[in-house]
Structures are given as structure tokens and as C-alpha cells.
Image (cartoon, rainbow, N blue to C red):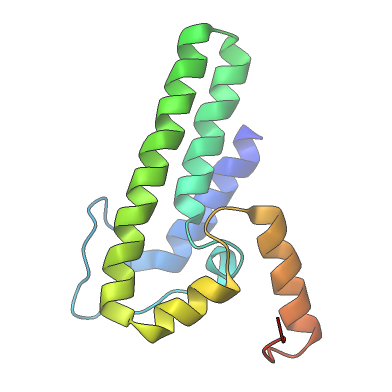
Length: 127
């Protein structure tokens, strides 16, 4: 799990390239990234980090590690909300469309939706 999470993080960083920042900021040249891992989940870096910490907690088999893992997931949830608000404010309906297509952190659902989009040639599916 840890190795897969690190691989996901590296893949996501490669797609963000110069847009990566540890701060929540929208730069003038910012573009909406929706390729690679961002076509499956909106927050692959956060998902990867949460999985990495969770994998360590399982290996440590410690109450303190489990508490730390839980706290990390809470921080990730708060950070996701803040990033979503900034991106939605900047990209408006483009981000709303992206959010409707791609789940925030549910990778199995994201893979399913991506497969359905590929099968349908990218056409919108009726709800």
C-alpha cells in the first residue's frame, strides 16, 4: 500500500509540475489539471499522503500511530474543502463540471467513472 501510495504521489506531482505548492494559492498561469491521476480523483496527492500515513500506522501497530493517522485524515478533509473553495472560485463552472465527473478521494469510484467516460467516448451520461 505504501509503495503504491508513493507512486501515486509521484505521478500526481508530475502532472502538477510547476503548479504544485504546499500553500493553497491560485497563480496567474494556473490551469485546471484533469489528466492522469486527476482524471480519477480530484485530490490524488492528499489521498496518497493519507494512504502512506495509514500504511505506517498499520505497520507500527500502535494506538498513537492510529491516532496520528486519523488526525491526518481529518486535516486532509479540511484542506480538501479549502482547496475546493479556491479552485471553484477561480475556475467557476469548469470546476463544477470537473467535480461532477471526478470524485474527491474515492479511487474505486473514480476508476469506474473514468472507464465509463472512455467507453462512451467522453460523452456526458444521463443521471
